[in-house]
Image (cartoon, rainbow, N blue to C red; front, side):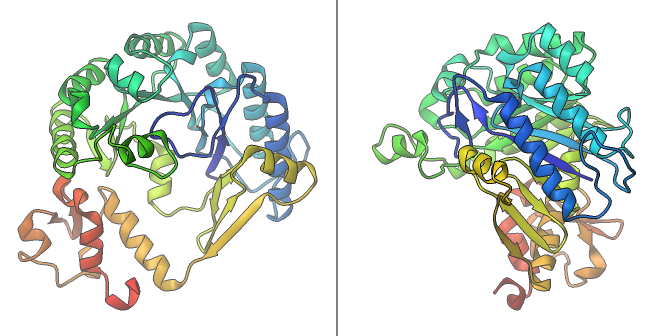
Length: 382
């Protein structure tokens, strides 16, 4: 069972963020954990073989991977985080805690030696650290609540606690007026020797501070040329440092690919718990109420928190399979697309054909939407 837990709480909203979050000075941690575990019981009732947290019995389900995202999961007090993970492992008794990839998203300012040791004792063995930049001016513009120095301190604290599977998030393609040195940020990130890096190009979402700044001329909209040049520079620098892009936004050292990310892009089924969490069973995609209070009220009243669902047609499933496959370094089988040849995408350098597989190059990943459109029959797209 691939399980995602959405922890919505944050101390502030970042300038670019449109995620489902709840800004709180006081985190209702106990109530949150109780509500998520109550939702798990609801999910279990609709799926044979699931076991009530803390209860007995057997289950055909094992748990791997487990991912706590947000929001800011590192804001959960250690006792409640530990109770949540312990209850989940009890709900899936076929799981092997030693083999489980358990990832916690964390902000650098929440990582102390004490917290890191407690997270490790609770079962966390991988941390995704929201670094975003090593430039204090940029971090202030983003409304981040840490400074650059905290990133290195957090990495050292995690390693000192025995958590060496560390991923760093970085955002690129920022407005030119910030004069952000992307190459410097990459160098400083690589100097920390993370096992994994996730790189995200800045996008402008409605109802965010960034969208308001752009609408009144206080910030520049994203620039396609800057986006492309910084993305390609990241490929160059990371490859030279021994990292491999196994997915359009994710690069890792050997053996340190994220099982969570890999499961998403392989089309595996997954279950999401918490406000705004999505689930997918291979046929239908469901998502929960996004607001924490609405989600809490529904679950505590014994009602399903599912807001809506989308049942995919066979054509939609095939289009999604193509898109997700081309996002990864596995690509698609050439036998499925026998007409692909030296003209078109290959000649432009968007894809390469090796060992019977069609795989995107870095240039191709920049043009993924156009590439998928070119490889898809018009009836499937319509």
